[in-house]
Image (cartoon, rainbow, N blue to C red; front, side, top):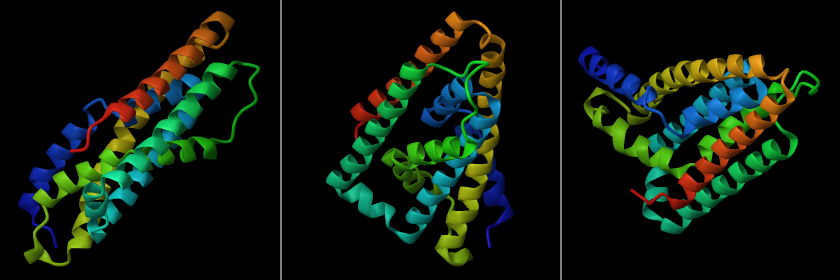
Length: 206
């Protein structure tokens, strides 16, 4: 369905994008500092699933609706801003994980990662700008090609963002025995989430 030459061109480009620091990577960094390596890895999985939803929408043509309707773009964007600020407030209020903190179900990390990705309309605009460069209608239906390229990006992102989260989780685990360091981690993580919210709030439509 997709020519080998096209895949050989797409994969390095996708990996380069995966290694570029962005909102998803910073979110996994904050998640790792806040809750540990495992929740950060699960959050990375949620982000990848969110990306695949964007890819599916773009492949179905619905992404063009978002890019052509400024009010819909803004609605999604401000929902994302509100959710990130909600997460930031929760971290600052309760602090980072400590040795006495009850473990939080990892499904919440998956949900948070997916919601943060889904409420970033810039992602679907990126998908619309990037993937079609490699799609060839002569090779068959458009949607399966979108999904294949999307899986490549999602898997690369899962690995890269997950590694960042695991690293942050390891650093956080060393510091949780120190109450002061734990409070600093809480404020740092809250600051990361707040910065992501501000970044989303001031972004301009492509």
